[in-house]
Length: 164
Picture (cartoon, rainbow, N blue to C red):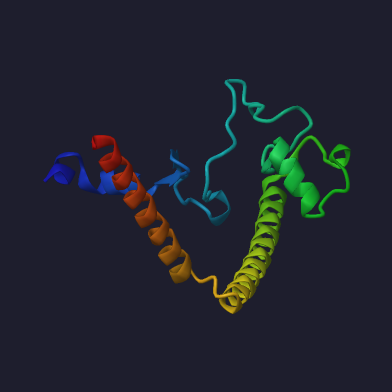
């Protein structure tokens, strides 16, 4: 009903010519000739027709680069991408940073797995040695409870002796 009131065919044709690229609506040109058809927006231009400066002068606006933080610099070094912190350029691609972080994450998980296996072996060995000495948890618990009973009896005897 609304489409008929607004001129249905024109409304639908207008919607077909619009596309959303990263949240900004761009209007495509009408398909007049095969070479005139455009899929995405033009580069943003100022009022005089010159493209707007979106990146630092001398830098490509379409490259996905960022300044690495201190932790990202350490990850780049630990992953073997660079030898020293001085060798790291001011801007590094985000793909290189992400790849180095993944490499560091994998190496850290390997180290944690190796430590877990070592601790498991150490616990198994110490448990077997304690079993040989008959120093089990049940024996230790029984000895502790026997001490508590003796201390309680001494406290009662001292209370009775005081009362007399």
